[in-house]
Length: 210
Image (tube, rainbow, N blue to C red; front, side, top):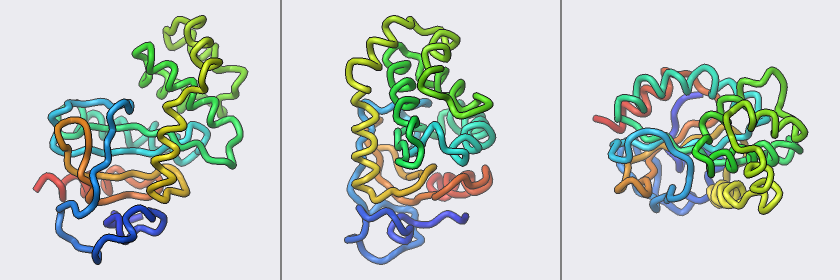
């Protein structure tokens, strides 16, 4: 699917009151904070890519295992892009919220991306009963991990879902791209819906870096 500006993308209802679509790489929309969200890359990177994802979504898995590694190598590791992850477990995947909670709890131990990679690399959708095993293999303190999951779910997943719903997101993966604002928020400019190609992301990022 080709890159579209957010106002043109069906489903991003948050931007419905903005002016008509423009091809210019500038933001006309309210900033989106990513304080507290999991992110990788330099906070000084000029461009932010924010992903809304579901650990039981096959298209999210495709993105995580095929496109994201290339984006990390070419853009994140080189300081060009700050990549932000947001949880958006879909209702059609009953155990996706538990997987999201597991990843969020791993993040509290500094192991979010390790758990992220394990969950998406699993040969089958990670069941709730198997999450402690994933935590152990990801190098977590399992007792602390279980306490985190049992305590609040955790809250990060609910916060991310509320933001996604405010934006009108209805499917995953969904991506918002824009300019970094001090390492704490982004000025959204464009979006990609679905598990698009690496080339589509490269084109969208390139448009923002001109």
